[in-house]
Length: 154
Length: 154
DNA sequence: GTGAATGCAAAACCTTTGCAACTGG
DNA sequence: CCAGTTGCAAAGGTTTTGCATTCAC
Image (cartoon, rainbow over all chains, first blue to last red):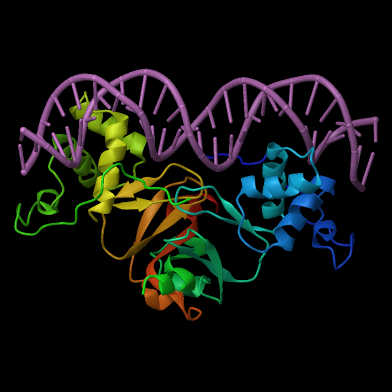
């Protein structure tokens, strides 16, 4: 049950390297062209692509990149807190480079994912926990109709 | 992307059948021994078993039941609002017959799932949504250490 | 009687892994 | 130099599907 997700231990960021403008270099993870590519794919179009979609986009500029590497890179970026992983019901995980406090709205109709900014999702929202529970992290997901699909319903 | 999960359309509950004591019969879904069995497995031990676990427990009393049928039955029960499906990160879905307002606490250490009662998870928690979004459903998941594992850490 | 549910095995889907070759620091 | 990363193909775990049979209503 205790499943280790990556094959290598994540080394926490060491400050003092890279530039302020370059979170990837600054993060302390080993710099590779593939990681750069994956990260830039996420930054350049801020939708919520699946690993497969990231792979396809990365491949168009770096044909030799492999899907397994994209999975590795995404995992590294998530562990380095540069990227968030969004787990919908039973579908492929999605990834976004928005590290601000926000939750995700999943449209039941078109399956699109939207960032909803705001501090909903902080531990205040959890309410009273029974004695002994230590809360580390809280996630909220919203489901319904996005503006476009809601309008079509009229 | 628009994936239909069950092979048959769910028929909404028709009132006037079954007894008050028997939510399954009263739900309007076609009654089958397998559905009864799956539902009773969930009711009898109120942990949060995976489909596989439900299958094993059901099989001990109904040896001919198949895993695919368990998946079908669980899906039917979820659609009939008799059972909740709990989707953890990337692991097998878990199921619980607690239909009260509650959220789920996932222990990072032992991977156990706990019901946290309370109205956290009502739409009030969602905060302000941008114009046009129609909220239908909201889910909150909590992550951290359960009392047992927290105690062991000391 | 008939449409829906079952059981089985095979397929689908997303993700991880084993391993040899390579590379960033 | 060498631990960590890559690419590939194969395996893994979970869930769904096709189809003939059986069943609930």
